[in-house]
Image 1 (cartoon, one colour):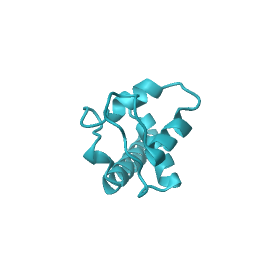
Image 2 (image 1 turned 90 degrees about the vertical axis):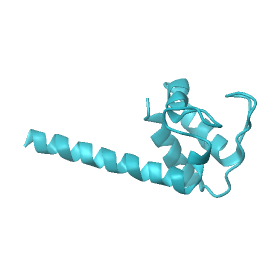
Image 3 (image 1 turned 30 degrees about the vertical axis):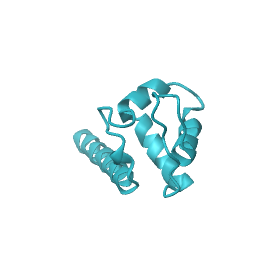
Image 4 (image 1 turned 60 degrees about the horizontal axis):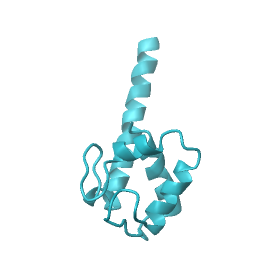
Length: 100
């Protein structure tokens, strides 16, 4: 029984991760970002490491996704993303912050 529960948790977690990756792809996030390597913008794992343990990280990053910004990762600015709703931005940020 314990093994079945562990398997179900793993499957559900994988499904959620894939759903959030699909959301990132559908919103064109993956054009500039990758999970493990820097493209135009930082790797999502680097973002997760930088903001780990910061109380206001989630809200800060949600605003960055929605409004854009510059100066945190070099000279390339992140443009605003009007195609992303606040709820989608929060989902994406929560997922990114788990990618340590």
